[in-house]
Image 1 (cartoon, rainbow, N blue to C red):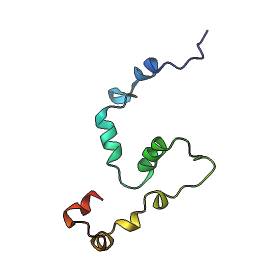
Image 2: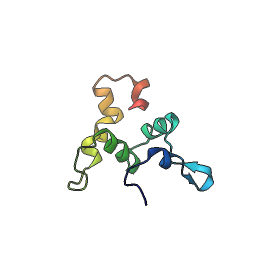
Image 3: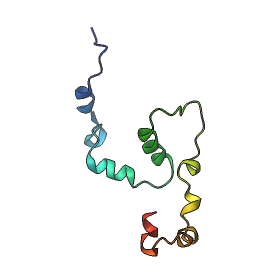
Length: 88
């Protein structure tokens, strides 16, 4: 008889092709946070805001993360040092 309980230990030990696992390391998290705007960035936003109803509403990343406000011209207009532009 199968248990109805979720076993994180069993899930984390599953081996995938190319010797990968389902474990998420600190390096993986750093990589996730470095993603540019796109599907993977939406993944991070969904982890940060798990209570939002993603299945019921269409979220536009430009509204959550206003990329249009991070152009060189707008960063200059807000007195952001040119050396920090790449960070944004």
